[in-house]
Image (cartoon, rainbow, N blue to C red; front, top):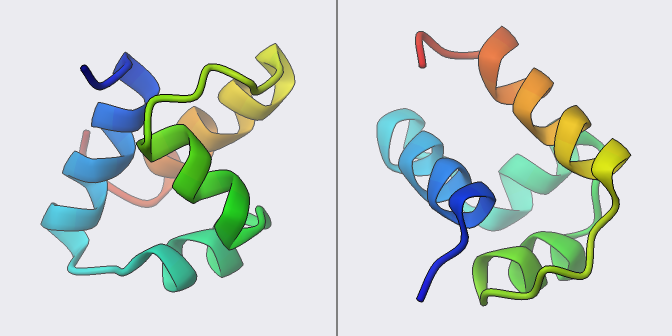
Length: 62
C-alpha cells in the first residue's frame, strides 16, 4: 500500500510527465530516496516530507 507522500509524488509525476530522475534532480533529492518513498518506505524525515510537498506545491496546481 502506498503512503500519502508516495501517492502525492506519483500523482505529480503523472500530471507533469516526469520520471523519477527528473523529479529527484529538480527537487534536490537522490533518485534512490524517491524510489524508496514510492516503494512504501516511511524512512524519511519530517523535513524531507516538507521539502517534497513544498516543491510539488510550487511546481503544480495541486
